[in-house]
Image (cartoon, rainbow, N blue to C red; front, side, top):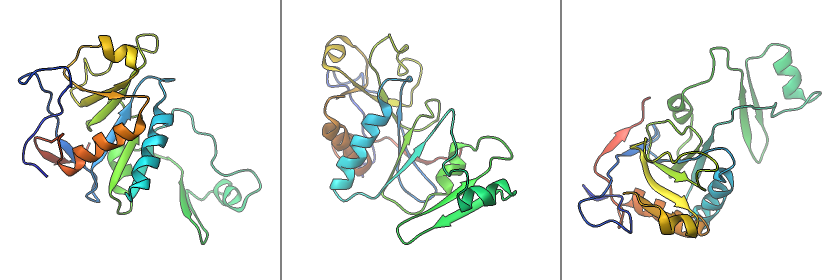
Length: 207
């Protein structure tokens, strides 16, 4: 990985670059966020980027923030019965996968707590948590959904948007084609691998 570098807008000359630190989870994996207003298409893009990175052999973990979460198990199932009997943690395991269902007695956990719970992986993608201090790609579809985050958030290093908005949006961030998730996946690879998009420093996420 290069010792220094920039996330540079394709449209901006040298000297107007925006620099953010690369952040790692406690397991050592780089952390990249995807943020944007509701309805902007974050989940669709993250799903496509995960598929593109997985096809290249990357071991990906995803942390997703949900404002309203329904039960992930269902009435009558054994795990549901254990939880409703009073268990605050239920681990469900099978030959294919396992899951932990944890009741939040002390309120919503911090992102750092969730990152600390992850098993080893190559990269963590975070959907939501738009105010977190992690490098972020903003998914932006125009003022109809809300004002751009990058103008107020120094952690936004890139803006993924549509061709018409890219043509008229002026900012010192990397401009990414929302219609081309493969290109966005490659930009993420460049970021974490020290390619053409570099980083200034590295930090462990603790907030």
